[in-house]
Length: 80
Image (cartoon, rainbow, N blue to C red; front, side):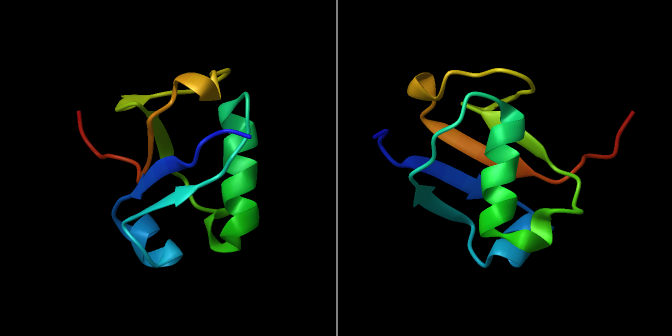
């Protein structure tokens, strides 16, 4: 089993999950699998758009959970 991962939540996501950070035991190979596990734990995230940063980089697709030290769920950013 993998070590617990530090997960940080920002903006309205922190309000929805009720904390700014926590450590969770998760196992996944893709961002989609990670999203599924998080929305299973926090159903109010299902219809919410958010980005996931892995080790402080916005990430999509396949990842290796063994190299992850930190995850962050970020609301969409406006900008230009």
